[in-house]
Amino acid sequence: MNKSNTFIGLIALLISFQSTSQNPLVTHMYTADPTARVFNKKLYVFPSTDIVCEEGKGENGFCMPSYNVFSTTDLTTWTDHGKIIDQTDVPWGKKDGFGMWAPDCVEKDGVYYYYYPAPPLDKSGFRRVGVATATSPEGPYTLEKDYIKGVNGIDPNVLIDDDGRAYLYFGGGKTLFVAELNEDMKSIKGTAKKIENLPEGYKEGSFMFKKDGVYYFTFPHDKSGSEEIAYATGKNPMGPFEYQGRIMERWKDGIWTNHHSILEYKKQWYIFYHHHDISKNQHLRSMRADSLFFDSKGLIKEKKATLRGIGITKIDKPIQIDRFSTSQDLKVNRLNDKSVVGWQLEYIKPNACVTYNSVDFDSKKIKSVAYKVSSGTNGGTIKLFLDNELITSTLVSNTGGWDNWKTIETPINKKIKGIKTIKLVFEGESDNLMNIDWIQFE
Image: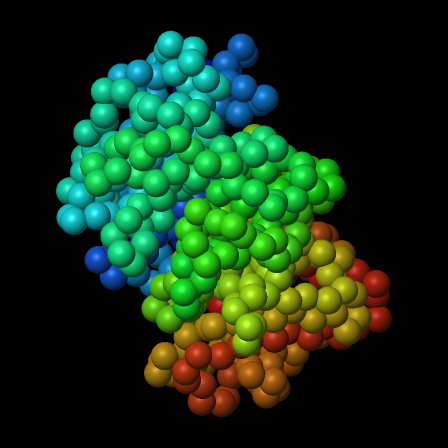
């Protein structure tokens, strides 16, 4: 088949899935290393881009040619503002290096400064860090003609402190660095300083934030076979820092990297990160997000990655219950139908359950609930609870096979309004009761 047609077909598949999932956040393209920022009361995410490598291209299986920017105001609907920088735009970079790794963007005095790594033409380092500027976070961006002198490394991150002074964090390997930026935001003062007192092993992806006067220096860390997200705290943006431990456990399903950012939006803290949900290929990643919490001492509570993600789900479309908040005694797998990118609940055992939080029923009158199901056994019963109140019981019989999907509807005779948590409990005799694709309220 023609490669361009194959690519167009893939994009069509991903777009059809975009509006039906929570995590991953974006499904029409592959996005990694998400840096989230709040500008003008809107949440923006600046990720890197993964594409399939052509033979002989890229490094370590990664091909990353460009950057897009995304935004949201409700944490559910995402706008892709398109490509803002391509590797061919970088005056000092290789035009086919495919090494546009993790970026960052900050605002100072009405100017947006976009920091990015790229392989330099002069071969002065593995990556050098460049700067581009714009008057809007969405661009267009003007790229500086040269990289920042004295900054040799990957994954730039910038903190602008309360006093207006700015600091650049970067590096990858055994050592991470920090340097104070000059007023121009395009050069550093003196030389970069090694960040001390961090655990041994590979580290990258520095992300610094400040909360209640404490500086939180966070970073991916390969401690035991893949990258967990860890952090240290201090009272000065350049250290010293005290290592505090893990924020998010490492992946154990075939993806080595993780890369994150942390911010507060509308009085809630979030962590943005990536996984290989769609591709199951560690070189083709998809960005995610989850809520993040702190204890009474200001320490970050360890976060377990979820499929549910963030945002409030409205009931005007089918709810992808496979993007659950919690589950018990069931599995999730990709749909066999290759014309869509989606998942299903399967191998559902008796007394299995699944929850999905933050569903907005608004004030609409709900008349029924429908499930898209399949079963190759005797099926079972789905009990629907909203905030632990039993609403309906729906009988699912053998549908004629696991790939023979049917929509089963049950009337609802109770008034429902407000934001609720859905809970489904499954009853039956078989060890494999049914599969579920989605649930919808009418």
